[in-house]
Image 1 (cartoon, one colour):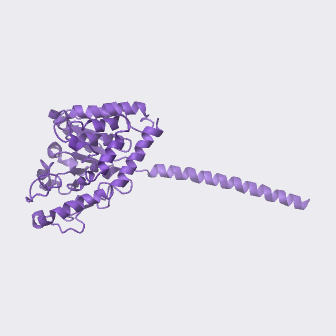
Image 2 (cartoon, rainbow, N blue to C red):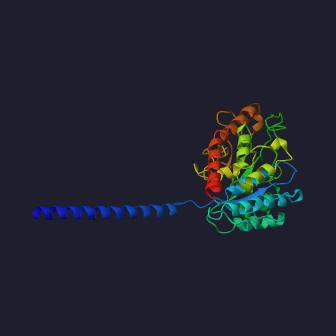
Image 3 (tube, rainbow, N blue to C red):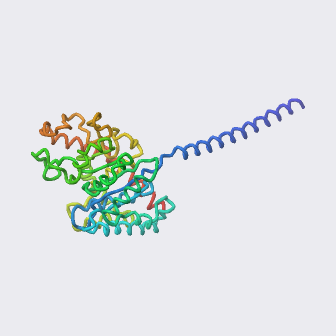
Length: 361
């Protein structure tokens, strides 16, 4: 009898221990889940200036806007300035949002965490003064998170806001595309002149040379973005993306009058890639990301300014003309830092779209 009682006691204790272990495991899982929610990084706050237009220039901004909207669940978009109002910039933006609206309804974007279409439409600036007011309010909102200002064109309207409200300079993080020196008369064709402003140069030097803004956080992606264009992969990606809903069709539609641009061009998109790449921290541009790799060339006089990384190429950032003989090597190396990261970015985008459009039906 004692043996039986002992066995019963052992079994009872064993059962109790199993139950206790289950409770402890369950509690641990709950704690870990809670901790992960608490530690989750806030969505990057984004304010975009774009020279989007309808058949009055490069259609790449129209593609980049679609790409931005595909990541509207991972970003907190606080303003969109279609600053070529005279070239149907507003109309081009609304067309993209109409495509977004169709996909929002057909593919349950709301469940996936995407903002409502009308909320995004309300973010569109109606004119230059409206753009200045919107940027000021967003920058001075009191948020502890920096406001990333992405400039997909020249810097004139952004510069207007900065000059009217210089106090915003320490509230923002600026990312510009193609605003430094021009590589040559055309992409992939090196030029002999070493002091010609790049495609988006207007308004840039007034800001760069103003001593009031030497401490402003600024990532100037000048030649690296050309890594978005090279090879056959962008053409293949273009065809794949066109299969994803109304926005995919819209991305293809916007190039119908520009045969030369019928690929996943999105030259301004590296400014977004920098923020959505989960493999790096946006606090450190010197760390490789989907946008490429960058360097702090003037750590003493401009402690928060970053631009294209020269790697093994000899390059004089203070006086580029001194090393202009190396311009081809510099250009090639700059864009190679993005090309190297491009497959991972493509893969992540396609996986995201599969989840949204195929699993989300």
